[in-house]
Length: 473
Image 1 (tube, helix red, strand yellow):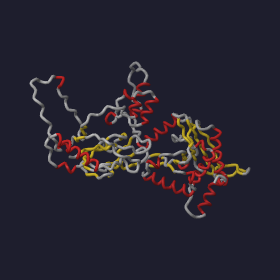
Image 2 (cartoon, one colour; image 1 turned 180 degrees about the vertical axis):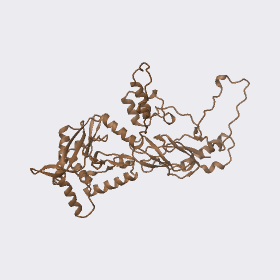
Image 3 (cartoon, helix red, strand yellow; image 1 turned 90 degrees about the horizontal axis):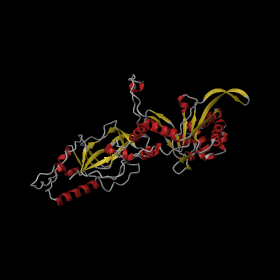
Image 4 (cartoon, helix red, strand yellow; image 1 turned 90 degrees about the vertical axis):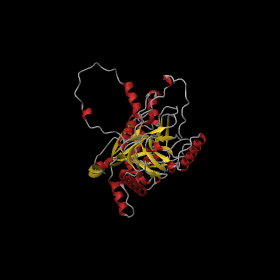
């Protein structure tokens, strides 16, 4: 006897609560092997092929390409032990039914790897799964006939009449067990936190997600309703505004993640920015000399990163995060350096692990590897999470300065503008030098302006006189 199991969208990485279906890799009726990729999804951080932990026949898919699903929503159903589909039906006895059910459950256990997403902290399967029956082609699987109702001399009262069967869309599945009552249907901790911060009672909301799942949009809608002023007196209809006429582009995927993160940074972090112009002529000359000596080429970004890690060693307050729940500043021992990379999918921030222990040559190689992976769209969630400090080289866009927004939950970001020839007073005389503007945004909760100014001044000194950096190596 086949058992139909439901595979739900797994947790794809740190802080990810939804994913968009990019491409289905299987169709209904296909036979899949254990851990075979069945769908390609795009998260806010990367493109991921999701493997199914069950082996069997695909009986239903949930969501078309382009649909965004929350973590925990059904992806597809798989008939496990499908070889039993052609067998004869049982004799209707309860003992035979229990035996067949036990055999089906055992077969399901043998046809499941226990993995949810290979390589991302998979765990063992749940000890108990709901048994589901497809409403599609597999609904004709032979089953024990239901016993006839006992005859009754009196008609049943009207209140005891059986309710009309629930209408379900094609391709949906019918659940054999009643949905158990339990906690509020919220998966994302971010949704719970948002509701708590704005005093929204989740138990009063009706979720718009699958099976009544409460999404962030439901909480935000409740917040807007609570804050909406009383309706004004009716007035004559105004002409349609540009907002209603213009093109609407969904904020989802990378663009949506960037919007959420930057909004949260502005909302939660009291940031401040300082900047300074620096003469980068000697730094540029030093790079030319290093590359002329042979060996792998050293990138300018790697030299700036090496300067950053040296500055963070002198000012460890800036390599930290703030835990407001505990009201503590958490200073981090390692420097995991993020750097902004513009791709066709949007802005991403790959992370160089343990940048403080790397040489300029090692940093150059890792920047090149991650940049190429970003362009190819092959960065993993691990490549895009865990940063402690960000270096943003917006000079590649031909601009001199900016006021960077901190990459939450980090405490600081260094921005680097373009390096261009400018008039500069050098050794008491006016000369044309290679000048760069350095912008530094910091979380004012972790330090005061003196610390931030000291960090930026040290970075500028190293840019102007690379020999200063040798003192900390």
